[in-house]
Amino acid sequence: MTHMALSARAQARPAPARADKVLDLIDVARELAIAPDVEGVGHVVKIAARRLLGADGVTFVLREGDLVRYADEDAISPLWKGTAFPASSCVSGWAMDHRETVVIEDVYADARVPHDAYRPTFVKSMLMVPVLTGQPVAAIGAYWAERHAATPRESALLEAIAGFAAAALERAKLERELRSAVALRDELLGLAAHELRTPLTVLNLAVNGVTRALAAADVEGARRAGERLQRGTARLARLIEMLLDSTRLAQLEIPLVRERVELGGLVARVVASLPSADRARIAAEPGVVGEWDRARLEQIVANLVGNALKFGDGKPVDVSVSSHGGLARLVVADQGAGIAEEERPRLFRRFERGAAARGVGGLGLGLWIVRQNVEAHGGEIHVESRPGAGTRFTVELPLAG
Image 1 (spheres, rainbow, N blue to C red):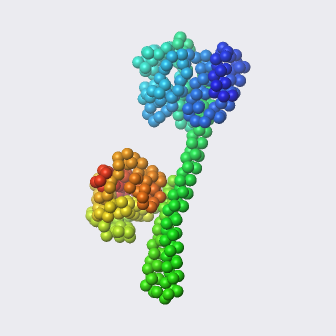
Image 2 (tube, helix red, strand yellow; image 1 turned 120 degrees about the vertical axis):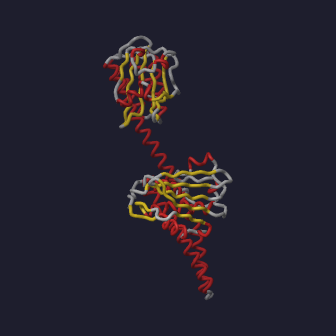
Image 3 (cartoon, rainbow, N blue to C red; image 1 turned 120 degrees about the horizontal axis):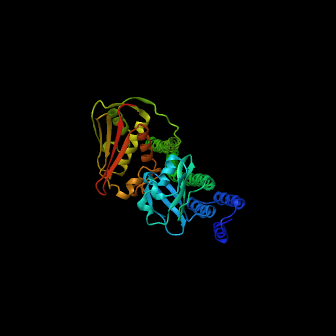
């Protein structure tokens, strides 16, 4: 039965008898089983609940952090559709937080009701039921224009609809996550194919160069081709390792292996191994020692400094190490083009690349891996940047594990 059919039934006859209500509940379960998304769930719920209860109005309320948003409604006159309220000041929030059905015969005699929000409406009495999917994610409210104490049977009917809605919302969430995972997989495959093509081309050219040099007994030519082979192989290995790291981190498969690490020395060694390392200026406070995972720390430094050298317009990159108040601080600052304000919130997302990076090779995983590693240590990372004025990343890590 379609939404329109359910609505037509609601308009075609008066409140049904008990047997018909059971049939209508079956219809509701079927409709919610095929609702494509949250909006579809709300549409079915508002029509079905009002029909089954004979109420003057029904709202479908979604939990959004500390707020509740009245996402949809079907009523004799407007209620609060599209409006968000603090969960702590609404009956819907109370029902979700306490995981309880609420029956209120007189809305103006109950302290949980925000009276000012109700005065412009027709509502005199209400019934509110939470929608539970492990955690309270929504609520369904039914309202009457005349004083009405919802009966146990009415409560049971609305609770049944809430149960069907909970299953539908959970299914919609899983389908949304599946679509996201498939899209992420496709994006990863596309990026990987594109990025792996370049080092493979370099390797192929280098192999051809070695072959020609050996045939011509050109030792110097063979040496240069061998160096290109090494660089191409190293880049290929880095790309593969980054892909593997992103997968392991996303699946929480890499535990921290903590040991005593002197941060300044580690930074110096990692930076020295990077291309264009001569442009990096290091100022390290001696004796900054913490309990960290050495390999993860090396990733943090390599990715941050490597990015700064890559996007720093060939200018010096400043790297500093210091400590204060039980925290180690690593700062990496370049003098490049900077990052637009609207791009900054997206910087640490997986596969996200800023405008400056789109003409340069890369998977868009480096900063995501940095953030995962920093947060795994209980630390924080911040970015400051202005277009034309460079970019500064600050990492703060607890010295103690």
